[in-house]
Amino acid sequence: MQVGLPPVATTIFFGANDAALPGRTSQRQHVPVEEYRQNLKTIVNHLKDCSKSMVILLITPPPIDEDGRERYARSQYGEDARRLPERTNEMAGVYAGQCIELAKEMDVQCVDLWSKMQATEGWQKLYLSDGLHLTPEGNALVHKEVVQTLRGAGLKAEDMPHDFPHHSKIDGVHPERAFQ
Image 1 (cartoon, one colour):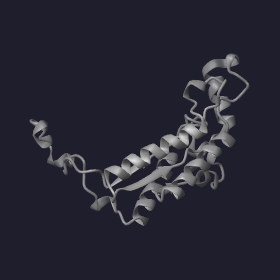
Image 2 (spheres, rainbow, N blue to C red; image 1 turned 180 degrees about the vertical axis):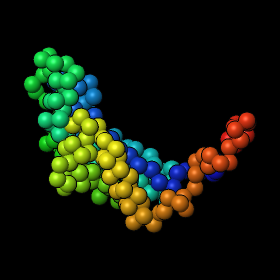
Image 3 (cartoon, helix red, strand yellow; image 1 turned 30 degrees about the vertical axis):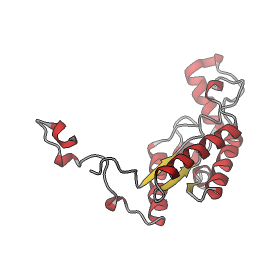
Image 4 (tube, rainbow, N blue to C red; image 1 turned 45 degrees about the horizontal axis):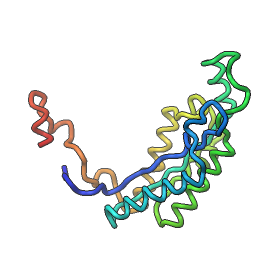
């Protein structure tokens, strides 16, 4: 455990909620795309100030399965569900595009999850449980892409320092000792 050192790598995975449409049921989550981009830029700049060697990895928002979102809304709200979608795949793509552009501009890594998921036939049900949130297969894809990108940047998970001790090093009677 290395206390007080900056992380070797950091992932930033924002945008799915930010891309909610204004004037719809999830409008309180909406962040205008320009503000979303600026927020990412601020975070990346802060991380670069913390460490010149840290690998910074942006992850685009996933695609949106609009039919899946509608089915989910109907299952929750019945006939009261709005006909207008609270998110669209097109808008998620706009946010994904801004994430990709910013990663290039700031010379940081990026996983284009929005495109990667849609490259698989049947992605809507395979990767998304309700048109928005990831299934176990969706999470597995994110893991695979993150690990692959970090390896491409010269990092291997098994060689990276741990923030906390391995569970086998924690005393079951006095666990606090492992964190001193």
